[in-house]
Amino acid sequence: METMSSNPEAVYHERGDTQPPFPPVTRSVSAMSSDAGAESWAECMDVAVRTALRAGQMVRVCVMQEKRVSSKSTPTDLVTEADQHVEEMIISTLREKFPSHSFIGEESSAAGEKCVLTDSPTWIIDPIDGTCNFVHSFPMVAVSIGFAVKKQLEFGIIYHCFDGTLYTGRRGHGAFCNGVRLHVSKEKDVSKALILTEIGAKRDPHTLDIFLENMKKMLSAPTHGVRIIGSSTLALCHVASGTAEAYYQYGLHCWDIAAAALIITEAGGCVIDTTGGPLDLMSRRVVAAGSRKIADYIIQKLKPINYGRDDDDDDP
Image (cartoon, rainbow, N blue to C red):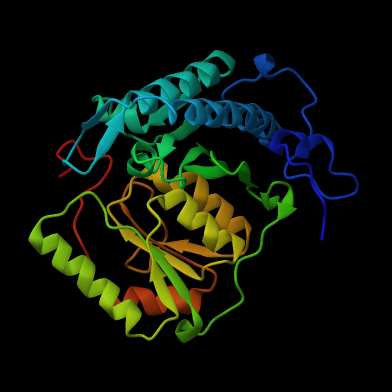
């Protein structure tokens, strides 16, 4: 097995004869335009990796401090000052380098900015995925940065803040964890699958009944088990890593799925809508799996939960 540096950033400079997750930077990012080609997106990714690592360091500092916690759409949809400060840092850093690009951020959207994905180069950012975990110092917290051009995902970066794990994926160039190439599970038998999910912010009796009914169907498939870890992005990274066979959820947002969807796809998996159609980043629903066979089985069992869309003004 490859031996890599314990410093995630050093992975890109100490890989030896292994294939890098993206080409090296060869020219100044300040010279790039909004219609730059694929090589320029690699430069964007280089900047984004360094920004994600910096954001993770901020999170590690903030988790040791007193946390000011408030709620957004529901009492269980939490936000802290750290979420806001980390997002401000990420967006300001990227905007300074790429002033013509568009941005979708979790906290910006919560503050009233429209969540619309256009053809423009667009950064899709979750500054602290797993805010409830962060509030309780439960160590499943990540920074997620996705990048799309003409509504197509070009790369994704997810940094596990507390164990220093850096997941990266670039379209057509594979997916990596701290520089080691990722591959999804080869298991196609759902009875041998480990499936991940999340509860979602809505906790009214009707929604909870559907959620529990769906989980019961997964457990009685039968499967090896169902897990909830409190971070959609890290759960999806487990699918990309092959340590879980599948993930499903109703109620996540585009910033929960954008980076991870690209990483899973580049690791050989599938990421689709709960109807079986192509992934719609704004639909707030997803099934991801190492194999289409397991994904299709999950889709057949699920009862839908309506969360509206990210790009609807009247999103419930």
